[in-house]
Length: 183
Image 1 (tube, one colour):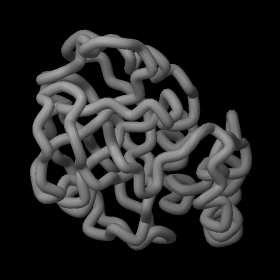
Image 2 (cartoon, one colour; image 1 turned 45 degrees about the horizontal axis):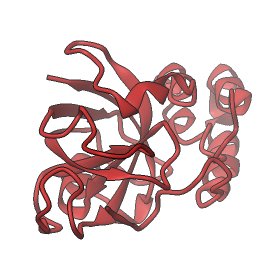
Image 3 (cartoon, helix red, strand yellow; image 1 turned 60 degrees about the horizontal axis):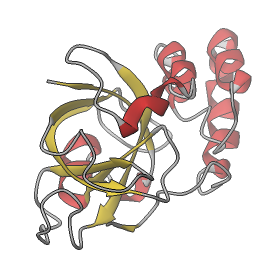
């Protein structure tokens, strides 16, 4: 199981300050500010995180769609999931029984069941559009799912510090909007 650094339940408000900053800064283009303000579910106050880049405001809205609730299974190859990436410190990996390094390119997905999840060992390509407000760069990383996260909400994909840093270039961002797909 994982030790979670920034992952939390739906009520996690760790980035709620970002949402306020984003909506103010994206006011330069009124339409993208509106997109950031719509915050479909508002679960974590991150609805504005991707709204900061104006052009990617639409992808930011879809990040809170909650359609990634199928993470406990293994979506088929090519199905793109909108979600949030966080990072954790690996302990005893649920899938492998080993303790991984924080520099390994691995991830955990939400899972509350017993036994080994069907996503164990699957490879996932994760993309992040970048965010001026969070000072993250656009990035892409491929990880292997070796763990599960019982405390993560359904839209979370939890990365090691190494994978999160490669994806965003900024660990201080803590939680960023992403798309990912099993490959």
